[in-house]
Structure formats: C-alpha cells, structure tokens
Length: 375
Image (cartoon, rainbow, N blue to C red; front, side, top):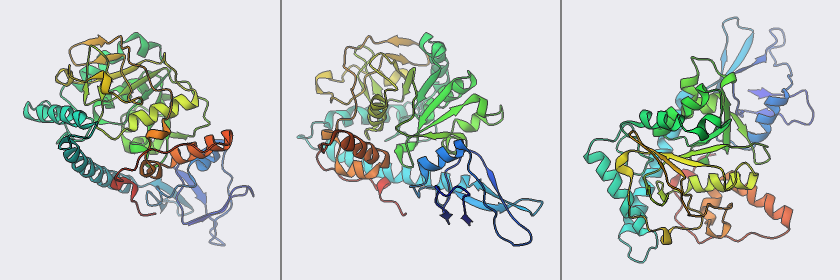
C-alpha cells in the first residue's frame, strides 16, 4: 500500500509499515479506487518520525478491509510480531549459552565468575521447581513462583506509591509490576526487548481500557499501545525496576542474564537526564536468588547495583555503597554491540556532533544472532 501525506515535509511510504500505537484508517475512494491523502496528527507524526527509519516492523502490520468496504484499516499483526520475537529470543539464548560455556571454562576470562553464579541459580531454580514459565529459565531473567507476591510487596514501597513514572524491564517475572504500575494510574516506561526495534515506549493508564491493561503489560501489548520515545524526550523517571538472576542483599550487587541491556538502558536514561544517583533501583526475585558471593571488587564500572530487593517473603533495603553508572561507557562497548542497537548508534553520532570529538570503542566480541536480521 502506498500512503501519501498531505504534508510536503513528510515522505511517502511505499510498502512500509509505520510503528503506531493504535489502528488508523486510510480513506478509500470508491470512484477512483485510489487512496486519498491524509494528514498525520502531531502525536502520530512524532511516532512516525521516531520509527520511520527502521524496517523492523515491516511485516507486523497488514491491510484489511472493513465490513463497509469503503475503508482500508491497518492493523497490528500480533502473530507475526510474537513469532519473530520468540524466534530471536531463542537464537539469543543459544548464543548466550555458547558464550557462557566458553567463559566458564576460560580461567583467564575476568567475567567467568559471573557465569558460575548464574548457572548455579538457574540450575537450582529448575531443580527445586521454583521456576515458572517460560522454562527452562537458563539464559533468562528467571520467572519464579511467587513473582506476583514479590510485585505486591514492591507496590507497597513508599518510593513506588509516590512515583509518577516507573521504568520496568520487559521480562516475565516483572509483568505484575507493570500491571500494578498502570493500574495505579502511573506512567510505565518499558524498553523494547533487547532494544531491537527502538528505544523505550511509554504507556499511560488513561490510554487504556480495563480490558486492555493486561495485554499492555506484554511485549505485544507494548508494541500495540505504547508511545515510542526518542533520546530528546523530556521525561523524569521516579523509580527503576530491573530483573535479576542473582543479587546480594548485603551489598546490593546484582547479576543479570549477561547481555548488558539493563546497564545500557540505565546509561541512556542518565544521558537523557531522566534519572540520577538518587533514583531508586529495585529488583524483585525469589528468596533462592539471594547470594553472598558476588565480589564487589570484580564488578565493572557499568554494573547497576540495587537499593531495594523484594521477594515473595520480605523487603530488603541494601544501603548499597556501590557507585551507580554515570552514563554509557563507550570504551566498554564493542563495535558489534553498537552495530546491533540503532538507538546507540544515534546517540554516539549525536554526542560526537555536539562535542566534535570521536568517542572510543570497546574490544570486539562475538555478535549475537539478534543483530543478523533480514531487512
């Protein structure tokens, strides 16, 4: 389908899907059999501008005729989106499994100890059957029995009650946190899974109905109902909720699943001025994910510590003394990871243009298959 805009400043879109937050209709003339021009609203123009350069959603929208035969509706193809997401997630986990096996057996690798702890926790959760769907939990932020109870403890925190905007990771064990955020009338900021298709999306309860709030807490729902934002968005995040594989209640040291996306998201929010050192970081985990053998002296400068831990049975204030990252550490970021994430490339170009200086680049790494996508 070709869509022509009445605004000469906007390009035509030929056989390209727009990332939209709700369905819209394209007027159809029954006489000429051609599509009439239409204008994008200010809100839709912002959505288009943030996403028009990405082809990642090309297969995720399809044209259907409505019952009156006079309009063509563009609707979100949920099946295609979910099939692609699950396929890419599976490939990413396969790559991480291969990486972790090599690093665990590499005595010279400075991060091998992290994989030893991760594997121990994943194995334990499966062996004790405290893991929840999706399983196996290896190479995931593991879903766990009692995740909803942990979420409700989190929602009782004063920092949550006072927060107007909460950033929550997109993983399964934090789904109830996302629901309670929206149900409480707050703004929900959530990243695109693995930052594949963009940056963050904002969801507001006033944009949803009681029947769509549950769906909005899923990856498909975020794609359907969320408003994508860019690096220039003026936003203040009052609370950050992140998933963990293991966390030390005495120090606040945390391990994720090993891909570094929580750290990248944190760094980009710091760059935007959306958060600072005082912004609380909370995680929700099972009690069996609490550990005491994360050596803080071996943590990297970009590792994000947590201030509060919520489990199904308790709330722990860590009083962490571990410094929080101050932004993106470009000298730690591999060229392969940079090539994988478009929003990072945009940020790098933006900073280099503003400063007139070329940013450093980190050592090379094996590129996960999530970046090797058909355009």
